[in-house]
Amino acid sequence: MRVYLDNNATTKMDPRVLEAMMPFLTEEFGNAFSMHLFGKETGNAVTASRAKIAELLGISAEELIFTSSGTEADNIAVRGVAKAYKNRGKHIITSAIEHPAIKNTFKDLEKDGYEVTFIPVDCNGVLDLAALEAAIRPDTILISVMHANNEVGTIEPIKEIGELAKKNRIIFHVDAVQTTGKIRFYPKELGIDLLSFSGHKFYGPKGIGGLYIRSGVRVARTITGGGQEKKLRPGTTNTPAVVGMAKALELAYENMEEDNLREASLRDYFESQIIEKIPEIVVNAKGVKRLPGTSSITFKYLEGESILLSLSYLGIAVSSGSACSSDELQASHVLLAMGIEPEFAHGTIRFSIGRFNTKEEIDYTIEQVIKVVEKLRMLSPLWNEFKR
Ligand code: PLP
Image (cartoon, rainbow, N blue to C red; front, side, top):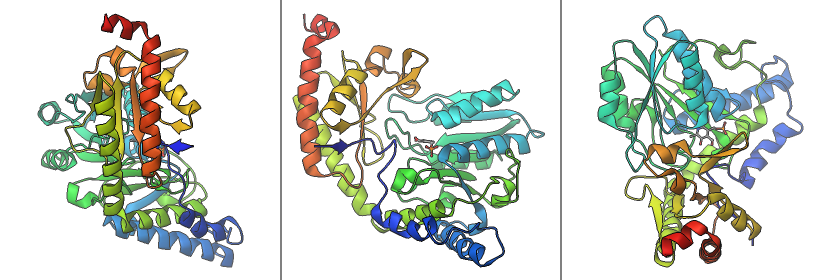
């Protein structure tokens, strides 16, 4: 059996998305900016896709630009706002648990003379609002906080952060790569000024993302080229991917609540079985609002990579809480920021359930996880020491 439980990393493209893209991968190949008939065909498709996505998100089509990924949307937003508002101040704020697309962009800006404050989170990964309020200064120009964390699934108090940002006249960017197309929300209701998302996280194609920029917010250009995407993301439009992303978002919104319920019930069933059958584990962020399909579990006294590779051998794809940096494995900054001990952070596995997973797959996974953990613990000196 092959079981894909890494849907937070990327998703399988929905066949209906591919179908919508096909004409633009074959006969309708014109440059969407060309004035001739071939350009008109693709240009109209891009316009219709932009309007569809804008409608679903409750924004206007003029407030949406297409990018090549969530990472690029994050970069254009954060660097563009930092540059546009630098005369007002050079203090920028983010959380301690951001995706590298934000974390490393802030670190880079720090080297360029911006002052960065990383706001801590609690043991569930929820941002400390009091610490955020205390960090705000007259020269703060930008707050960027993710909507949901990719590793543990925690949903952040975005509305409250939006209110704080508005009260203090600070631009508010949200990395919503893990929530757009997964949970229903409207950026304008949450006080968001800029919002990044990515097509491949909601059963669309890879290599396409989007950035909502509220009308009136200034973003300086950080990539130079032609006039596409309000000059903020120049480069020939990826028409098939734009069309695919719009179709994917449309499908996501059609079945959002059912998908959420189904994924959450599979996830809760999975967790209840694992908790019942395996000792010395922690389900991270269990007590707070989190993404319906995400389950982050710390298996104490084990290495996540051994679990990951053993499960992979058995046909099950998951991800671990460590990141490779040079030849060293580093514990995830997210888990460390939540106060998890480094040795336990290393034993953390993320299971992310998606649209195409079935109860049978979850049953198979439960069975195999129990076996793998038991076997690896028998070989683990740490576990044997603990048992003594
Ligand atoms: N932000 C978050 C929270 C993510 O989870 C990811 C991808 O894992 C990204 C940004 C980057 O998105 P992309 O893969 O489209 O560059």
